[in-house]
Image 1: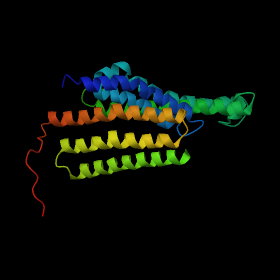
Image 2: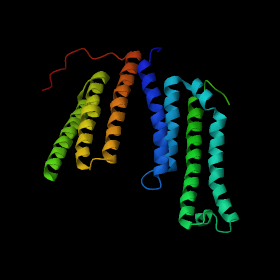
Image 3: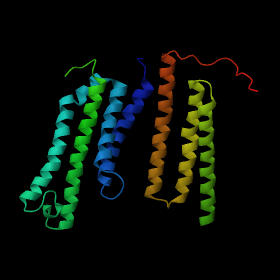
Length: 141
Length: 106
């Protein structure tokens, strides 16, 4: 099982493109198919591929489990925080119009931030679930 | 010109569909994992490649063509690697290839 050179090389080559593609899906969500959910899953899939080829131990070194849990919470915090900010600016919860001088720009920023929150949460939860299933034997905690 | 492009595109797409169907039949009919992988590999390389080529003739040359090309490059890298990984794990899992001749079916 040592000489998985083809798998290792392919994974090493592909993972950066998978991560960039996730960001493409993320930022394309404003204009077409895509968005935070899909992007988060694709982003997590890059790490899952790394774990499948290089082993869980090395993946945990790159992305420790507590970071995924923190991501899962931080995304929700960002999402809800945008809502609180719009309330603080004197409007309804998650009414993006007040985020910028121009309501259209406000909508743009609001959706961007909220989708970023979705991306972070989905990424954290997906990878956390993967760790929980894959690491039951070798890692505790 | 439009008609020529359409005809070319449909020829390529039909060719691709032919390979996909042949690959599917092969996956169903072949006796063991290695020969099935061989059939499935046909779907990935020839089938998907020809369909993407046919689709490329349907759009104006530009960004969409580049995207189709990227999809092709991605498939071109990933599908042989996944076939390789499957065959390799089958080999490590000591799956014996079928060596006997197929029985005559009446």
